[in-house]
Image (cartoon, rainbow, N blue to C red; front, side, top):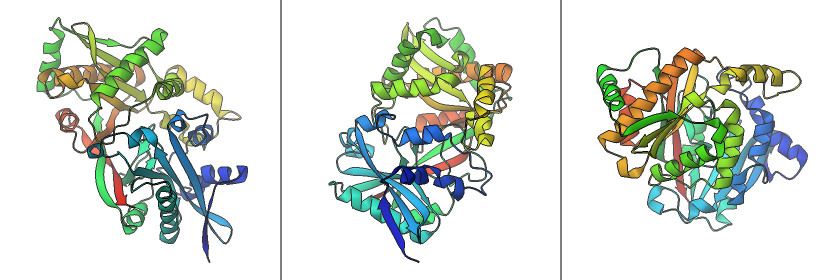
Length: 382
């Protein structure tokens, strides 16, 4: 039974590429089917502004004519301009959107992605990353037994052996932390928050959705500064922040996103999202004919078990200072209170967090967070 790997070249191929996970994860109770419209938009130039600075190719594996796997190979030209010591840099291509029925299929798909990257002058490959580092980076290697939260990936446990068997070595881990938000934080954290509330230099405010573009610009400026030295960092473009803002606007609630000001200057932010996956898991990827009405009703006032913190940042000049920790704890505590009283939430998830981000890992530990998922990014020379 020969395996053939061919580029996605037709409308039927695109459909097969997008919809393969429905068969791969058909018997996985933890998998959350994405909305199919968003899955198509992700891989489509003109729909995803990632392609304004990136190029990609998609491949399908077939065995006796039956689709048994898929992979994307892509090059982010902004990533090529980053310093090598931060993970990306010249010669770094990526693979992602990887699915395979078995190890033989996985080996053929990874080899095809590598050939495509090598043919475009890439000298090493990082993956899996689907597609941007800001979307779903890394392979899930711990935490397969429970569902991913909004904007997080899910993978079969077998993929780890497939990727490592193809000669990839681990280069970076991304962790998520979960915590019971119904419990007060330890007394020390409460004292730090109370001290900050007495400091006239500090103001913690929620965002104003009537000034959405201006608030998004403030958060983007802080983010690009705060994360600028992090491993894997690639600047977010104005088009990407506008696209992401439009996509997330329905689940952006003013009392779940905080901006910290010091002496009147925005210096930190924390973004929290209600776990949309709880609402859409039963939709099987489809909004029509009736799920769109269910979703609109849910969005009016979400009541959900889990809140996810996908992004948090403090400007570099304050990082490693006591002030940075104080601002973080204040924002976390204010959002925790709102999540409980207004959304009925009982659980928080923080991340992803780089394994070497000492500041964020220390904050997660201080509020009694426990690692619940680990994602692994791999590297291989070409």
